[in-house]
Image (cartoon, rainbow, N blue to C red):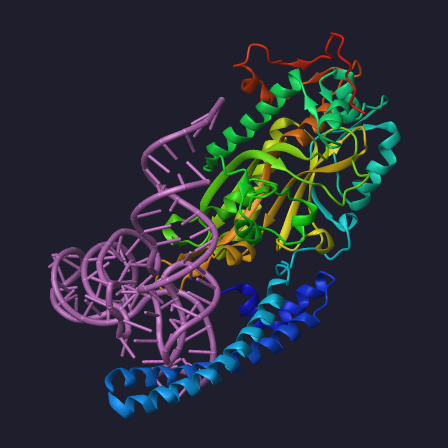
Length: 462
RNA sequence: GCCGGGGUUCCCUAGCCUGGUAAGGGGUGGGCCUGGAGAGCCCAUGGGCCGAGAGGCCCUCGUGGGUUCAAAUCCCACCCCCGGCGCCA
């Protein structure tokens, strides 16, 4: 049974509690409860009327002559009442569903209460952070001030920001991209192209090794599928639509992978299903005006390797921990200092019951920035997509749980590499873990990315 | 885009012409049988409402309308899938 409906009838306080934790109106629960009761009562009456009508119909089949005519008149009269009752039931049901579908996923007990991202709670740090002396106080406040012992080294030169590094290297052009396509687009060249490919290969290789099935999904989805995987509000803010077609460009491979089994009933023996998607991602980034306008941190398109899991409800919280551990292992492998934060209720989004972000340390900015998002969506997506499984010991079909997590998103990973492995002379050291993925390409850099010698190319990155 | 074929319950399939409680097989679960297993036989198998329970009832044949006392079945519109033609990296 769908968890929201189950809680509404069996534990409405839990729903109210969840709404309050999210800073939302718990009154919607009572409203939904009211319409659920009205609906059940009206449906009961409707079923009784239909039963009468069915019985009449069956009698008519066996009768002849005036007796038959009389029953037909009776049935006709009954139909009018049924029609009225049907309208009533339909109205109550629509109202109840509208209310229930608007309730965000029930938050997990361990999700911290908060308003925005400043209330997210760091839970562990990794790596030796390179801290410019001008950022030291803020860094210490954020780490030791919160009781974390974090490894760091102080440098007396301030690393160049990732956006400016594109210009320094001469390998990215966002000015010409803006002219051709608009802001938040980019041309990447040379070593950064190899780096993008190597990052994806690195992530995909490890995910496959860990038992995740590689998947190239559709890059577009029908609206019906999209409504099952994401909040309706995202259609305006995040998702591109193809003009004149019922197709939407995917914002992440999470979405087509979630929709893979829509409408299906799986065997419990088939679970868990582990997928790793590789795809471009397209995002409008509406509502992000003024944020990260330079460079390639926040862009309309990038490549991503994603982790996705379908599992039985009892296992989803274990899988949630596994997915963030996988991501951490990938980022540890790259040697990029980072931390994991527990996303607070105000920053959680409606789909997830709990979310971890992995944030990389960005030496030029002196703060951690989101690289990975790891969510347990419980049955929020599977209810809407009608993805169920047959329990092994019999019993009614149950909704699966779905989880997703970034493995590596290419452009963001590149920004983290450009800042963390930058040398004072403007070169960038390539993480050792990526070198074997660059090895097959003769023209790819292997150890160091050096600024490109000028060939009359204006490397504007603005 | 045009022409043809199709969409039935967890899966496969029958029913559609000729309207009257959706048949059969497979899978799965349970039971009988057995020292144990298999075979065999029996029951169950989607969603929902009422009921303490036993049980009762309603809905469900791609979607939405229409005709009818009654629609998987007849009519209309739409969606999707497959094949052929055209176009094509």
